[in-house]
Image 1 (cartoon, rainbow, N blue to C red):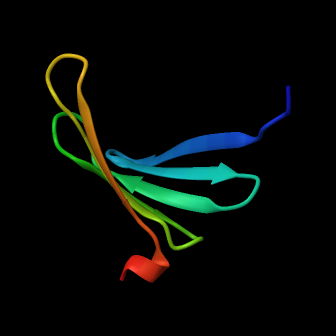
Image 2: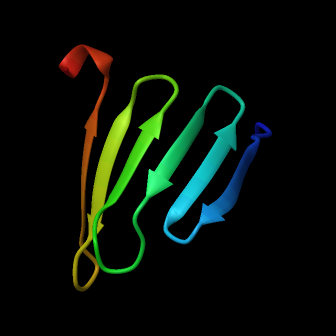
Length: 65
């Protein structure tokens, strides 16, 4: 089982700084609304929790523009 490194810091209400071995990212949004994440690798993710066991996620990379 490989070892992983991941740390998350709450900067302001609704804003988190996430650090792992290969990149850093900023996540905004909390509660009922959508969350937006932007990574130093160019990855962008928007996610939304839906009622019940459902969730929605869209991920874009640099080449998607």
